[in-house]
Length: 133
Image 1 (cartoon, rainbow, N blue to C red):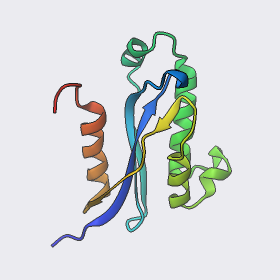
Image 2 (cartoon, helix red, strand yellow):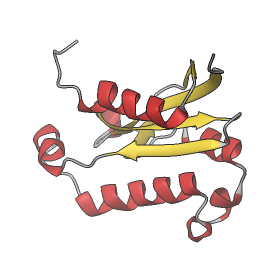
Image 3 (cartoon, rainbow, N blue to C red):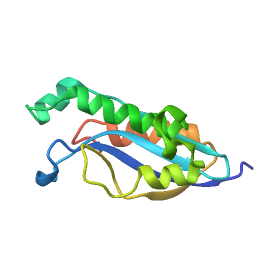
Image 4 (tube, rainbow, N blue to C red):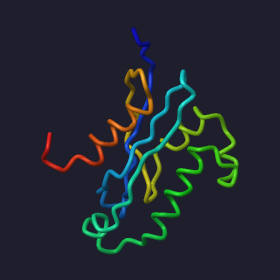
């Protein structure tokens, strides 16, 4: 019997105009303490983002996502936050913020393989076309 591990995840969103509170899911961040796992998976679909919000500075979006990924990976080039332990980095990345890259509320679950779970959540919450359920 495989052991199940507690994990936490949040959906990564692009919020072009914070005041409108509209967003587009672009990725998932998943943390599993017992497996010392913290990873993000995201896709920047520029065509879809531009259809969603005509005026969107893709350089800024890419800059924010690059920093998000570097912090997730513990890349010291991202600054002091990236030097924290993975639990603290996850908490910092999923904290409520008012910026172009935000995350959903954190959701818990159980899994036997965090990598496979990240892939499944990404497929269900980001790649699945609207209306398919």
